[in-house]
Image (cartoon, one colour):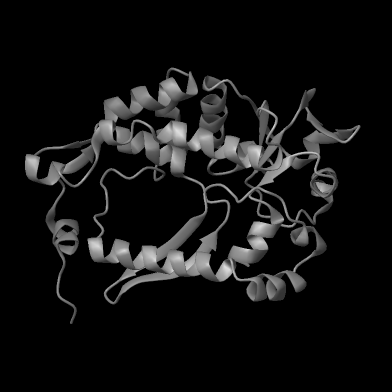
Length: 275
């Protein structure tokens, strides 16, 4: 039987790090700009946010990092890319400068160590967890050393915004990102719809126009992708129609094929990493 790690012991017996509910309420309601939102979120999504963290052993973190680095190495190999893209839809063969945002390397933690179960190229939850992490508190100094606290994550939101700006500049180095569309089918009905609103507010707080849209909300005008009267520079794709094949995605597919907007993550990213 594998030797128990410190993380195992803490997960079994420690509840010294918890979420300050009032602080989380203030953080989320400021993020949404909506007083009373936290109570509505608890009622509609009672199991969305965990009260306690999970501790992960350092050796497991290192093992996960090794797997990720191996994957990145393989994906960069020309024979791998040629083989995979030859089997992918035509839209995935189009190269763009965008790499992809919020890749989720999803691991299960087992007694034998972490096991990769999928690569999710449009993983959700990061912005919600940022608010949770900022509201964590430790009841003792010893356990407090295991989490960064608000000071340690203070720059995360800027990192998120810069990631989208980098995606746009990779394709349009001479231009500034003006407008992002957060796209999913029937977005208000999605379980993570609260995060869509958080993203919209975050982008606007950083001087970027943002809207939440269904694929049917778009039209092409002179090779510009337009929704709600605004020209969209970046499509933040939260769809599970990764290759934009459905009838609802006809306009988005045409926009992607014409480079009318930057799509992140792109169909190519799904083919190379997640399929």
